[in-house]
Length: 181
Image (cartoon, rainbow, N blue to C red):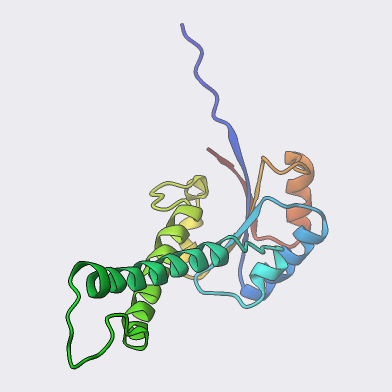
């Protein structure tokens, strides 16, 4: 008889009844030195990202680069079509009327920046992700209704199942459950 594969532990998920309880718990978890954490709530909780020490600044420079590419593409397209490919003498105006090129170049800057932001955000967030291990928590379906959850991943260097469970229980969590991958 073949051995059954053992499921690997994703981490521990603690349930809280209110946003202030979740916020206080997130601060304590960060203060205790846990870094691979995440919080789930039915609405945005002001200060939660700061409490979890979440400061991801990778999106801004990528969007700036996308906007600059859009500017260069828009202005370059206008220059190519009006000066190189199909120059027309309309009313004695110069072929390279740079002032008239500004509004369309601005629009392509915004267009490329917006698409870059949307696509990059999806990639950095790992979306689409129809499955996440926290969905295995028995009461996690209430995360979109009226409950608040705090997860600590087993991949965290400070994670020890027994010690982390005791720590989360000490934060007055309603329930702490182990979540499998």
